[in-house]
Every structure is written in structure tokens, then in C-alpha cells.
Length: 196
Image (cartoon, rainbow, N blue to C red; front, top):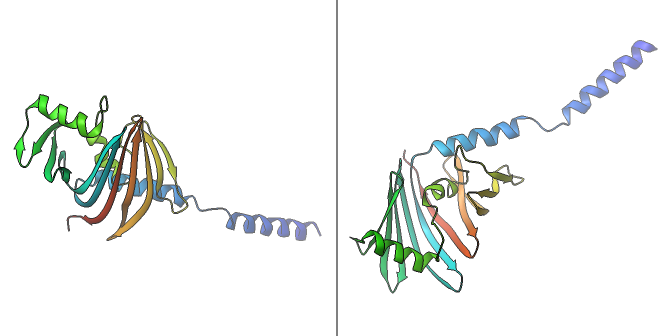
């Protein structure tokens, strides 16, 4: 009788173990996060909307990232003129209709369009638009039921992910909202291109 009870207890323990969630789910997020953080070449096309206090604009967006260089083009925010931001080695330069602005002019233009006192986190956004935190920096992550990033708090910014697109074997954000104080940026991605 004792052997039968022990066997029944052992079998019920095994059955209980079978219902536990697999530990691979967390490992899966960590592996996908590391792979996306290592992705150093991609292009995003879509729309951007910026609200800074009472001001704001919206326009087309094209972001091309190659290693530490980002070329970000926003069409339509200044009466049809194109605004471009080039970030390389941590330094940002602003171009209007292809013409570079002096540093003081660049700063005035960014303050006018993105709000006074707000530093535009372009270096961080490189990772945020991919749906991952900046590596090596403190972050608060909230995963959704699909094990993708739903919310991120990093560098004083709150980032929310409302929708993802399938891009090859990856899922990349299709709708992102980034907020800090009275500045809100919304990015709608309609097309992602990755190197072959």
C-alpha cells in the first residue's frame, strides 16, 4: 500500500511539473532582445507626429541606420521643406532641404519643433524603434502576453508599443509612442527593410 501511495504521489508531482510554464519563455525574450540590439543596419519608413506643449507637427519619416550613423528624414514639418537629422559618433547635425545648418541654428530649429529644454534622444531611439532597451543602461521593461516589449522606461522617457509587424523572422514595432514631460513622439512604421 505504501509503494502504491508513493507511486501515485510521484506521478501527481510529475503531472504538476508538466503544467508549469516553460522557463524558455524568458530566455526567448533575452535572446531576441540581444539579437535586435546587435542589429546595426536597417531602414524604417512611415510617419511621425510630434506634440511639444501646444505646438506640434506630423510628417513622413525615413530612418536609415548603419552602425553608429543614422540618417533621419522628416518630410513636411516646415511648410513642405524637408528636415534631416544626421547622427554620427554621438553628434547630431540638422539639414534643411539638404543644406546643413550651423550648430546654433540647428539647436533653435530642434527647440522650435521638439520643445524647449528637451534633448531629443536620437541615440537611444535607435534601439527603442526596434522594440528593445538601450544595452548597458538601466531600464524598466514590461512584456506583453506575446513576450514582446509592451512598455519601456529608460533615460527619463516612457516608450509604449501598441502594435508589431512581421519582418522576415522578426517582429518589429509598427506603432510606438515616446513621451517625456510635455513632449510626445509617435512613430507609425509602414515598412521595415533589413539587410539580406
